[in-house]
Length: 287
Image 1 (cartoon, rainbow, N blue to C red):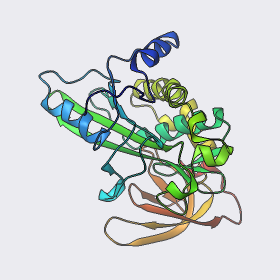
Image 2: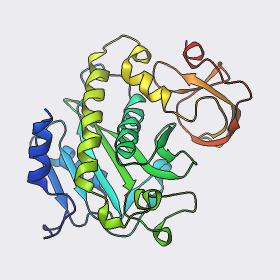
Image 3: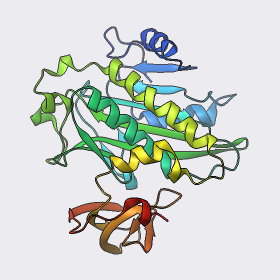
Image 4: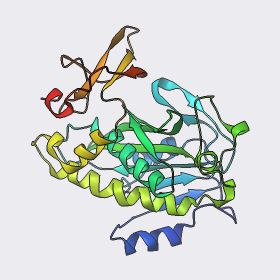
């Protein structure tokens, strides 16, 4: 990452202090004016460090020049227009609930966005949308394997100060647009703290659940409550090129998407087609 800038949108010391006041310990917070990819930078620290960074280490930037999306896509937006950062998670030995990680992150972003005055919903597996279906945030989790065990590099980019001409795609939006405010009024520090205040406790609940079915947890219930994908007819484009059309009726124990109560999908692009004629029983569809 580059040298520090005098007017960064996130002040490291301020955030660490405020997080401590909320009972959250951040071992290391790195923030700079520009970075090619916060996920790449944090993964590099994991792979190349003499000692692996501690859990909840954060790398963030005011401008990400070569960000990664799902399925190898890249994306770039104007400087200082997004809250872009990555956090390191160190799950316990034997952890297998990988699919819940981006959904928990989505719920944390959704809650923070709501606190900022913008109602939003979660789209399986890794997006946060406005209630009208415009994309506000993308989330990307990747696993780094170490001799001591796997690490999760969890990155997210939330559109904050973007104006209509800045949007990377027609079906996107930003907090500034949704609230009708000047971009400079969007507080990145407050948003980051709000996200962390949900993300870290929910992640701890996930790792503490052990072999029990996480679908029964309060966090999983929150995720389902705010997931617009459930009860919607969808078209899933799978990585192998095949397609599946049906109604999203639930999440299985690993957070894979259940289609028509019979098929579980672990990866793919999901396109919402229309609400199901008869809303399914989400709880029943997940068993």
